[in-house]
Image (cartoon, rainbow, N blue to C red):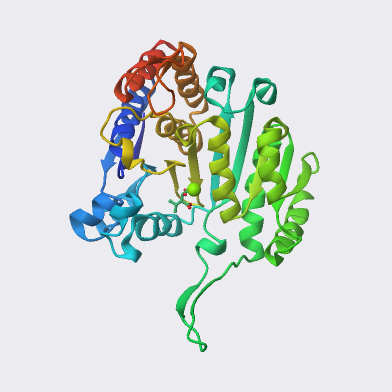
Length: 368
Ligand code: IPM
Ligand code: MG
């Protein structure tokens, strides 16, 4: 019997609702396998700030330190409400980036997966989707502009100015490249290296290191693509991609576009992996406008559980079952109001009902 500790950071907005459904799935995994999960809830995000004055409190850090893996819900407030929190304690700067830094979760995997059962959510035409979209964005998560030195002030000419720095050293680039090549060699052996070396020197070094790492993976074909061209290609022909690797900010932007081609960021789970610890989170925000309405689809949160099972607990077969269970619920014609409009031919169910149906399907799957 294995026993794992999982820190549960439900977060803000729709976070607690979709986290509750993910926890139901974890309970079914326990029933079906020789495994127990000790769930350790902890405050994180704007809710934590209002409770304790810190968006990432000491107790939460201690719980995360102790955990084998972390399941994190979305955090943040509406633009207006954010102003109630001092700028450095706002949950993105005060909690999320410090979490990434604390565990050096440099490798962010964001699958953009549109099997046939989900194709009706996509704004793309059937001929563009073809047999389905199945790509993974590998985003460097702890370097670049988001973590570089920042400065704001008034310059000698009396003008307000800002300076942000984009810095990578070769070891940071090498480690994310190794992750991307490793993933590509397990999949279709095709890696798109996304860069902007016609303008940015950071991309020149990025590409140099990529070529060095590529020598260790001779069976992986590399296609180099400028980031702006990649944005277009993702819309026009997403099926050409399998694994895409890129630096932090490019990955932030293109992964949201990934959500766009699926039809919703609600269909985007992710895994954030460091040398000793990994955490799992939806790629989207806390959607304060629909919070508490029981209409948010928990796919991204349950998908994050699937990624946790595979990456942190070596339970690949059960991870596949979780994906299949969710896709099965969509294939049966169900949806939630955040993903579909009334009258679009789907049977509308709530967040809780979606979770219940996933659990029901999972229980019916043959045990591994
Ligand atoms: C994401 C989010 C975060 C990021 C924000 C909330 C800081 O957009 O995970 O993509 O920019 O990385
Ligand atoms: Mg983002």
